[in-house]
Image (cartoon, rainbow, N blue to C red; front, side, top):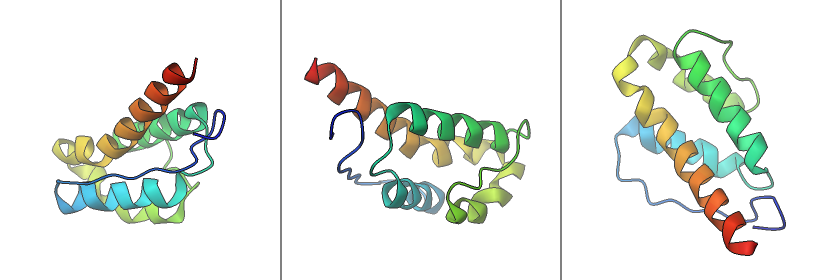
Length: 97
């Protein structure tokens, strides 16, 4: 962490292709973001997957995952990398205080 922002992140994804793709997207764009920014994107992505919101346009690569909306059983694979990064950010912030 660099203050309240992600300075560097890494994941070792042992998941399906969707989870690996989602992890690659969050890792390619997550650096520099705060917990609140990541949480906001996670919330919007979860809402879009469930059909309750518009698809996030923050990161163009997310559009490649839009067809997963029709497969609710795969939503967790898409969201897990964001949840892992959010948990790591919270742990780092708590460790810094």
